[in-house]
Length: 208
Image (cartoon, rainbow, N blue to C red; front, top):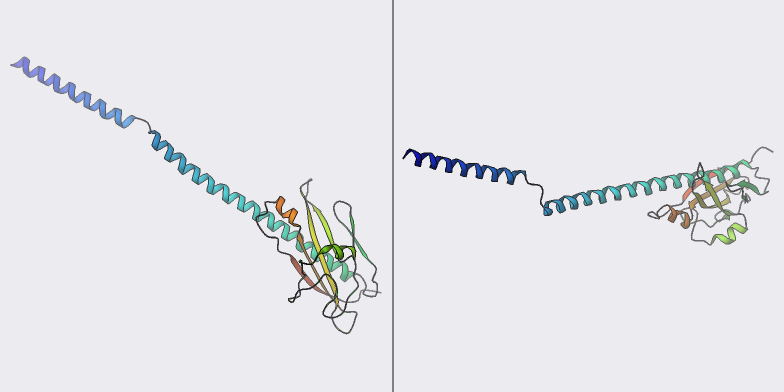
């Protein structure tokens, strides 16, 4: 009887040890293939989102840089024309980073239309006009800007209009605008349309 009880206890303890080992095996096993695939999918979605965010941020930064340069170029043209005496209609020379000399015609046109690039109803430069004739008449230029340390060159379409502001021909309304050419926008990703930067200024006679 005692032997039978001892045997039963050993069998029970053995069965319990087997069950405990089985439980430990189940809890210690690695991830299944399905779980691994789900984890990889979640990681891929997260990386795709981060990549999209980075691309958008880079394109936005490039757009801000080109907008700033376009504004500076428009301002440069208005300052060059304003600095020249109104009684002197000689061409103004400006040089871009490639050494190309561009010329600006500061002569004012009639009130309402002006001389140079066509103006829209709101007084800004009309960029739908073919620039070929404007460049030949020194009323527009393709100005090349070079980034520091040998960076990418960006070409800007710069246009201007000089108008007599009143019956007094010595007072001039100077409008200038610039934007990067479409080819330059594409080399930065082409994600955004380049809106022209317009600047208007009043120019009075300079020192004679």
